[in-house]
Length: 113
Image 1 (cartoon, rainbow, N blue to C red):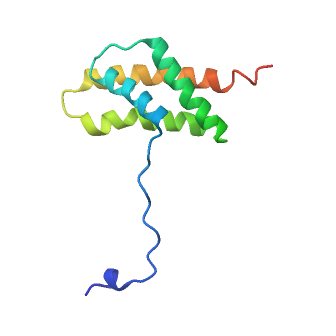
Image 2: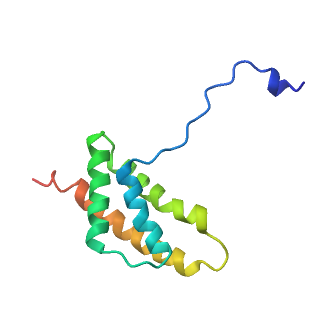
């Protein structure tokens, strides 16, 4: 028997990073951008704002909210990225940049005074 199997002090196994229903809705817009399905910019903005509000209420800092949105955007790349998908990747990067700017403007909208 190997030493790895005999070790009793193994820490907890990390759980998968689950997405909320609002994050899943935002993910649909990133997948649509990757697959070249046209979606409304206003609907993307609303989805980003919902996720931003949810994370802000949970006490997340602006950097954490932006990283989370980029994480949600990276999911289509990880599942669909293959050789020859440069156009989809480019579209997804553009939508991610829009989503990030929407996120920043929403996060700081109430604090402007």
